[in-house]
Amino acid sequence: MVRKIVEKVSQKRLISDLESYRKEAIKFGATDAKIIKSSEVIIDERAYAKCIYPKCRFFGTSANCPPYSIKPEEIRRIIKRYRYGIIFTSEAPSEMFVGPFEALAKRKDANAHRRKIYEITSKLESLAFYDGYYFAMGFGAGPCKSAFCEKLECQALKPGNSCRFPLKARSSMEGVGMDVFGMAARMGWDIYPCGAGVSPEDVPLGRRIGIVFIY
Image 1 (cartoon, rainbow, N blue to C red):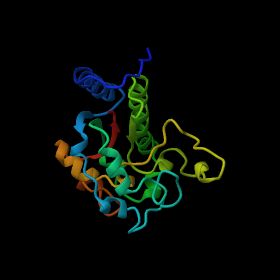
Image 2: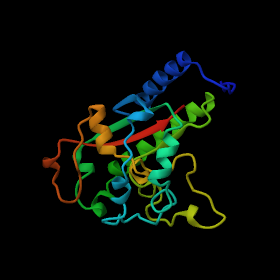
Image 3: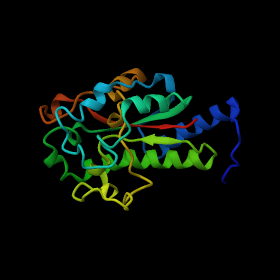
Image 4: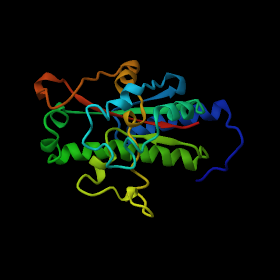
């Protein structure tokens, strides 16, 4: 049932809702989820810069990636307007994270895991929105283009067109300047650098992380 929007949500209702969203994230497929204060979010311009140097293959190819995504100085101001959010993670075997991107792109399980984080983000954001938290805002992991439209031109970059997946595609946390590795460590989640330069046996696991700011 859709809730009526109120001018101010009570602390008791807010905490109850946050705990409900945390549990829902796990029902939706997250390995773990936690309530996070906005003050715990780490914004670092270096995270945004890593999309540019060395330049990511998706730089400039998606409306949700740099240079089109929200800049770190802007996201810093936006997040200060929130008090709480839900941060969640999904673990998967390291084989789905390491090695050349071209090889990973052919793995159906890896592609499904990329989409999974965005789907959880979308579901949580929607739940909060219809509960009256109309400013709920979510961020996923990795380029949404690699999850939904890897072989297609980003339709949202064409004048007069919108995203093919407006209810699922979002900017990634790192794509707006959030230090995902630092935040994962702060949450107590084991996280390792994955890439083409390591082998699956070098990395115990891989994980993706998403976040939805609620209120």
